[in-house]
Length: 266
Ligand code: ARG
Image 1 (cartoon, rainbow, N blue to C red):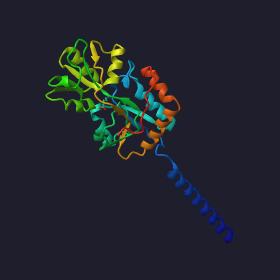
Image 2: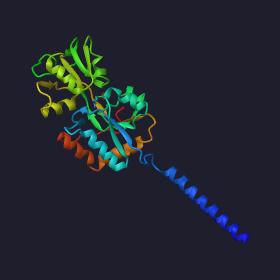
Image 3: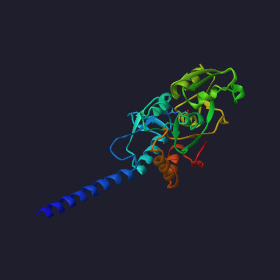
Image 4: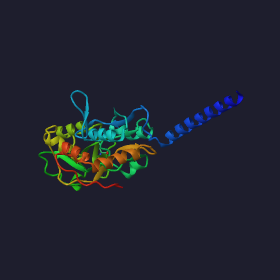
């Protein structure tokens, strides 16, 4: 009788050990995205055609399609959260969101406080002027002019390098273009692709983009500095680039084939 009890206790003990070991293993091997906790992705939907809200309030755009494709391929349970562009970096730093996709340019300055995925879009800054303007053609002709930029953007940083420029800052794209159309500023410095798209689609009228780009920039998905998800996101982008999905999304929004992307831009 006693022996039987002994055996029973022993085998129960073994069973318990096996269960504990198994659960240990699964915590070690599981990727960081398990559980039902949403993976919060910040976006500033004032940047057609990368992120905007349609009439029924739904998010749409190149970045939205790309992020949804990343979610699908990686299993990340993403949940978008609208956030003004200016607060994006500090919100990431404070880890109030898990990532941000918002046409965010990868810059050495930003890399000091947050991390970026591999580049997912080749972009660049351009000068936009009123359609009848003939004298602003390049960087030199911007000297001493009134210039509109979005707060916290690479366009704003660039504008600071123009001698004697009078800079007006705005919260979002639509506002500074309105000021340009109204004649309150002489030029706007902002992301060329977004502006060209808006002009082509009739969202912006009476303005033109000056042909030569001022900079070459790359967009990346931003995360807090030590994010365990960066690896997952990078793998997903690489897969989407090689399986044709990236090309499909690019074609849908820009009606052309995408340029080759480097693995790293800095
Ligand atoms: N590429 C620029 C930057 O990183 C501007 C991006 C603006 N994006 C937006 N969703 N408003 O500074």
